[in-house]
Structure formats: structure tokens, C-alpha cells
Amino acid sequence: MGRLPVPSEPASSMPPLSPRVGTTRSFATLRAVSALMLREMATRYGRSPGGYLWALLEPLGGIMVMALGFSLLLRSPPLGNSFMLFYATGFLPFSLYQGIARFVGGSIEFSKPLLQYPAVTWVDAAIARFLLNALTGILIALLLISGIMIVSETRALVELPPIVTAMSLALLIGLSIGVLNCALFGLFPVWTQVWGIFTRPLFLASGVLILYDDLPTSVQNILWYNPLMHVTGLMRSGFYPSYRADYVDLTYCLATGLIPLFLGVVLMSRYHREILANK
Image (cartoon, rainbow, N blue to C red; front, side):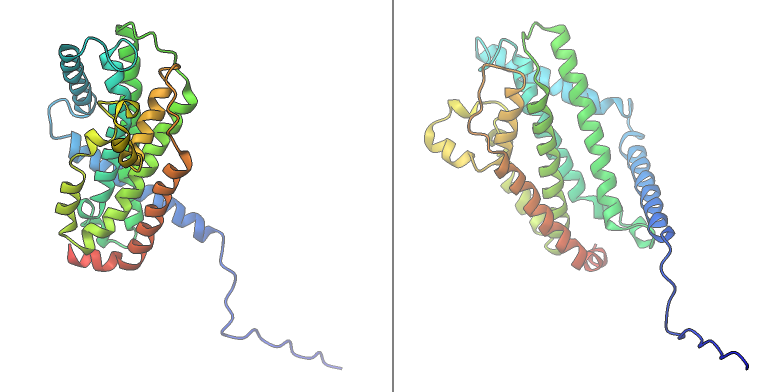
């Protein structure tokens, strides 16, 4: 008796996807992010004398000038005995947030020529700018804080958990606002000017120069809703053991970081083609 023919597989059926597909995309993302980071480093630092060194010298000069101004106006800083350390503990997390938010928010505009290639996505552009500015900001903070504590008698007792938490929150909030603004800048060009005006007093409203505890209650009730005020208070509690920033709410800071990030990702996923077409 002859064997029955084996039915052939339907033409519409597809073989299972190979795990190499995801791996290939991961390597493509890594290559794209690395290339974008190198391109930005060459563009931003390669055309100026001193190059990357200016990224370190600029905040150091700002801290020294502000510390000198503080010393002329006040006999002692609000915390400790070093004006430079007091200002640095407020300025560095704020500067980290500000740099991340600004550069991630402009990632589409900066990388538009490369985003015409299918291998490069808006996610790659945002991640590249986030990583470059995060690594630069953290390096600056480490060098400046170490230098200040070496050259001046700060008498500070460093506690890493609140410091790491504060810097991580600054990174998260900066990324969140940057991704959301990346969508809003592209969809509503006027938002660029509105955002610049709206955030102009943010430096003073984030506790860089002052302590939250020294403010009137009516002002505290308003500035409490600024998550960066929580970040600077948490940062300073890691250098001044006697300072208790009881007003800091980590849940609120996480919410203000994750909610705008979610909205920004949704908007960019939906409208990134329109944003590129309008640029």
C-alpha cells in the first residue's frame, strides 16, 4: 500500500521570528546612539578652544563667582561654613536637570538630518543626548564637589544615599520634561518662547541660593509644588547631617518625573513623523 501524501504547509503560514531580529535592532540602536553621541561631542566641544574642558571650567567659574558674592553679602552661609559647598549643592542638581531638559528637548531639531535614515529613530536621538549630558553632569559634580572639599575646610559628612537619590531624581525630571517638550516644541513652535518665559525664575524658585525652611509659609506653600525644591533639599541633606529636609516628598518627585515622561513618549510615538515634517 502506498503512503499517503503529507499535506503541504499553507503558503500563508510564516516561520517563527528568529531571536536575532531583536538582537539586531538592539545593536542598531547601540550603534546609532554611540554615533549620535560622538557627533554631538565633536559639534559642541570640538570647535572651541579647550573643547570638553570648558564643560568643567564653566560651572566651576560660576560657583566661584557666586560664592564670592555670598561671602561679601553674608557672614556665613545658611548651612555649614563654606559658601562654595552650599552653592554647589544647590546648583549642581539644578544644572543637571536644566541641561538634560534643554538638550533632550532639542534632540529632534539637532539630529533632524540623521533622522531621515530608517536606522535612526527619535528614541535614539533622545537617548544619545540624555546619556551624553547625564555623564557630563555627573562627572562635573564629582570633580567639583571633590575639589571643594579638598581645598576648603567644609567639615561636611557625606551621606551617599540622599545624594544619589537627588541626582537620580534630577536626571529623571530632566528626561521627563525634555521628552515632553520635544513633542510640544515640534507641535506648537510658540511653546518654545512660552516655556522660556515660564521657567526664567526657576533658578531662584528651586532653592539654589536659599533654603526652603527660611522662606515665609505662604511662599513655602507655593514652592513646595516645584519638584526641584525637593531635589536641592535632599541633596543638601546628604552633606549637612544636621539639616533635615522634612518637606521632601519622594513620591511626589517620582510622579512629576514619570507622568510627563509617559505623556511625552505617547505624543512622540504618535506625532514624530509630523514633527519631523514641520521642522
